[in-house]
Amino acid sequence: MEEKETLKRRLEELRTEHRELDDQIARIIEKIPFDQLEVQRLKRRKLALKDQITKLGSQLTPDIIA
Image (tube, rainbow, N blue to C red):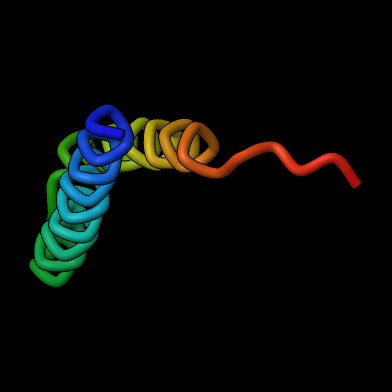
């Protein structure tokens, strides 16, 4: 049970970081000219976080055989 709570906390941390990256990317893009490489780096990090979120979410959701 403790492992499940740890996974839930980690999942929430990842979701928070994902939202923060989204906000950061939006702020950078508002300024013209903006650093394309920085935006690409942040988007890659955001995608990696999304993959981790999906993986943790699937670990928390039990497999249901239809």
